[in-house]
Image (tube, rainbow, N blue to C red; front, top):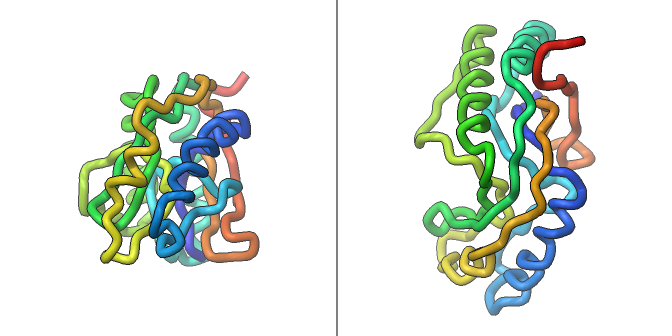
Length: 181
């Protein structure tokens, strides 16, 4: 199955992000972009790709351990940018260092289980909003996010998500951050 590990923003943050995204979607040419559904907004920590079903139990066990090694932290959706003309994204503020550490921990856990990980770029916490066709300049869409900040929330769990199914994204498992009680 096709999997990724992620952090899910709460509904309040997604609702707040909806206003600048609606402005971006109203710009000329926005209909040429593939916009992500609000219900699927997430901060990817690691994209695993196709994972053999036989590895999933060990992967879940290792991700549970990783989640326990990282304390809950505060995060906000903030600002935005683009990856060339490939994607428009919303950024993060607040616990960005903690997100990076958690992403590194998840990546290490995934490799320990035997799932190959290839990262082309350094990790940037982001929530993908739209994907480009390569011929549409994405600068104006990213600019609609300038100065945006959602209310802060406490990130309390790590989730493993299946991609490509119906619904588009399905949470397979979730683990609380921090040591258990």
